[in-house]
Length: 313
Image (cartoon, rainbow, N blue to C red; front, side, top):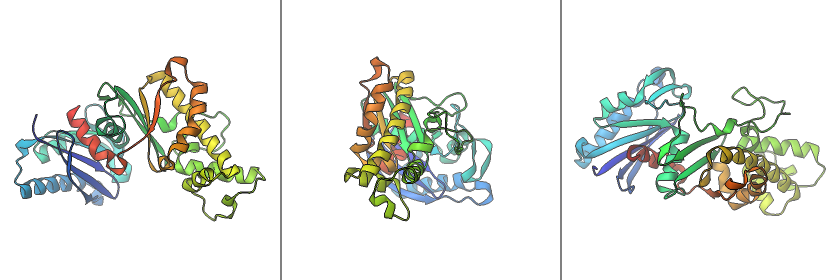
């Protein structure tokens, strides 16, 4: 195996780049602005030019690079085709892996950004040394990634791991961003938690510091729950119940060794796991109940670590 590898985490504003030894040691990281002009046609050439310039400055040959992996915010098929990334301006299907390989001069693998972040936690984060792992990213929405025996489960059309759109409520009247109703994203994402909070503030007469807040955040809810506020704990209990049920559904299908919780909401810490566990154990098949639930450890670097994980897997 060659000495170095590169991880890219491509977002709508910037692309994070990590330069690694193939042992998994991060040597240096930086960001490149995402140039979305002309329907995003400059994005990949800019990244290729940036990494080639970096290698030139370090006097490192492309022959010393094992490869690179890139996570992109869209569905990616197993053969490296990206099926549209609207927030990058890409409205067509493109062979991104082939394009980057040709421009960079070393092999480049491509994956969905949430899946690649999961690979990062599996490769060098909380899931390291596990055989199977499911990561749930709790942010503005909910993403996920499934890794079994060192392999990402990406699905036929690249939509594997769309955990945020598992259905958990038949009675929901509001529509999720995906067009369906009752998705877990509507209850346990950062925006979903705020949504539940506003519903409970209207439906409950319990006094709470949350009532004095002009703009409630998911962090506010969990901070007040940790401080002992009754209403905040009811909201957190509802979130945990929904998440626990969703994880039970996944566990009964995948039976992973570990669930890893990442994203901004996971910064609530262990109270989130405490709220999830009772519901998870209630709904899970008996042979799956001992699945561990842990917090992610790599933070915003999960994507670049996952890019290298794609190369080494």
